Image (cartoon, rainbow, N blue to C red; front, side, top):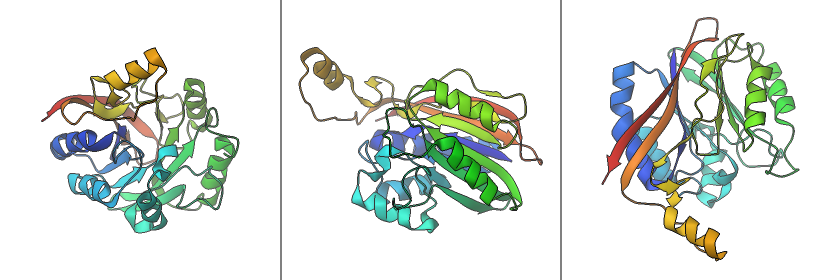
Length: 264
């Protein structure tokens, strides 16, 4: 089974890039299932019905999230309905809207998708991600799973590397998200789990993490408040990884796929 994961889709320009790139990529590479990181999908912060439908129409099957998933009330409503196939970090407090994991039923078997958030810089209210993942894996230990896919949304490289080794041989893939910067370390770990520290963003190249570069430089130089804005046109890097999962649920390969596309 071939699973594609698309890194943080940033605003409308990122969505347009996905719509341009994904249909052909799915066909050319015979991709079976597509997961996308959705927390920045609508105006760079949060999720809306319009943005969700755009990406579903483009070929995305499932969505993960992060701390920005909650920035729009509409996103909270979307996460309440399991039919939308969108989850948020599982180590948020129990009364948080939505689910932290879900099993996707596909023609190729059941895929368990888990979303967790790194603790560092993200608040003391988060449970330890390792303990939460252990509980989820135990809860689903009797399921006949074709694959288990983990999105670790966090700031620290060390956390995202450590979780990969901790889960090696127990899940199909562990991918990092959140920093918007692709790392060059995609590989299958010794016990068979595909891993990359951060997939990066699907957003404008000439920006600072997706935001107009002029705004960030001005804020930095003059310590002045400014509203974030996202470029509407320009070159976008579609950042993703393609994981090939064997019949035993472990990975045979992971390939980093970076595609530049012009959004006019």
